[in-house]
Length: 447
Image (cartoon, one colour):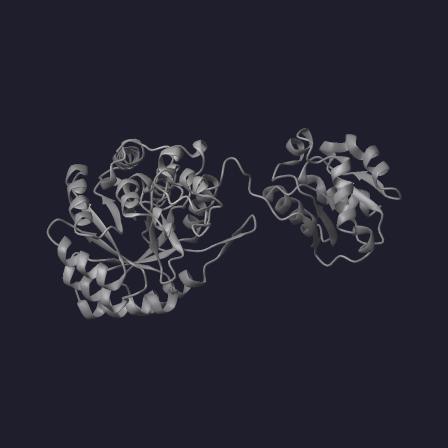
């Protein structure tokens, strides 16, 4: 179908500007539909003609699929092939696999560890998104016991994996309403698993030996009225997975091939530690939807979660902290005052170095649009006047008795002007590199 412009789409909308869709005007909503950033279903007054004409045209090229009882985990809904074109929207979900053949006590310990796992990075708390429960025993009762236990402990959507469709159907019913995933339907058992997924509120993984058979299968399932699908490609090497992921995403975005416009699922092999990380990074960088690690390994999770943060950030908007005056340690009125920008990485490095020195201090973080020190200074966002204005607006003088302000060494040239803007304050030029803060504190501030 030919892509419609915002003006063409607006002709089919009610033109009431009711704002019930979340946009201020019908024209604004039409522009979102044209950019595939909205769903026609958001318009409560869309006519049957509009639904017929615009429904498929306005649908995101990669269908959004939600998981969890609260539908908080969303995959898909991507509209660009390259991250720098705009941004990627929903990050790859990381899951950990457990097998029903593992020792019960070890399983319970692993599940609790997964539930408790948290990683703090640049102000964000990262957790494991899903748990895959694999049926290796062939024993229905044993598998169902583990499925129930896994969900009771982790309280996150599960990936139910078994070669026996009857066991999958039973497991789907056992955790009905949890928004989990059945993995995976083939042309032989699709009808049975579609029914189980639909009745119990789950998504369905689909798989086939090649892309042609997979598109045939997804098209057939969609025509029957079920569309919460996840694609599991059958590949035999990293290079093949790289190629298939790219081909499918390109077909969905550039060719509007709806049969491949779904998130993906990949189970990683446990054969080699390094190979597992490389395969995981491939999924994150090459459009993977769900990446399942073969076992719980915190060192692998750190590597993959860090890589994912680097990819799934808006390239046009740096990660930033809220502009404010932050306490590092337990500062008092006489504690020194440092200044830096609100670029997250800069903030956490500087605050960490101050804390590591054993010093309690105040850290002034003005609005710099998430830029680093030199970049924000060059852009006029980290100037003497803007810093002084922020300090006055936050009434720093009413919080501290100290009148000594320590600025980054890279912007030493603003020290005189800053003193002019803040009468009564003495500006001290700090080190250029964060690694020198501890020695600066011990040699200069303590002197």
